[in-house]
Image 1 (cartoon, rainbow, N blue to C red):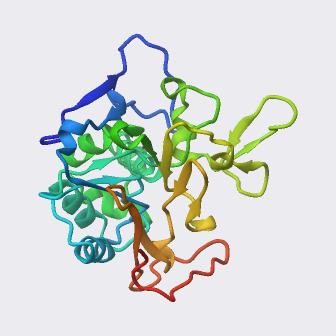
Image 2 (image 1 turned 30 degrees about the horizontal axis):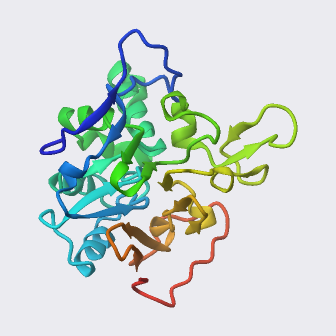
Length: 279
């Protein structure tokens, strides 16, 4: 990833690691660490789910006057799918030499791409037709996205969906890190993760740190802030906002309104558009 070589937690070839959602190959680096040396005194900007909304992404970067010279760009996953400019978004984010964690939609893309290569009957069609325009290098790039990025100098971790409380980072399940929303059976029985929001409690409400976790994935709950976790997916692709967190003092949230609703929601979500830029 260009200049970002850094410290990494590398998965040993013979080490047991829980499988992900679709039996995909796991990345060589499961948990990435962004060092202070790599940051080099620059701002760190963490984005919620982009989902191919390239115009809003460029606008958000523009209004914050951020460039690769003065900012390190980090994405909470789901940079692709559902939105209008998926291939272009990937190319742009790669041009930023950005850091990205693997989201469930990156895994969906990889699954459909690999299936299409195995069988002519599984040709890319419908909402995944655009995947055929990705290069082999793009696929390799997506395949090696880590599940988490830790930033020790800001005492934070970036993940797509969440982290299971009470479980060390190295033993987190890939399916939880890309899909979980809530935890059930907290008061009785063995607690476990679920992707549902209508049972249990948000995992972030049970996360007690010490690291602050920035995550995406939960546009249905809009921007969420807990003591030790912040959900940055504010539903841009659904007509909401694209939101990012600037970490350098003074830290602040920034967002821009979606230019239009690109995808209908399964549930009614009401977004507040009273402000174009939130600081």
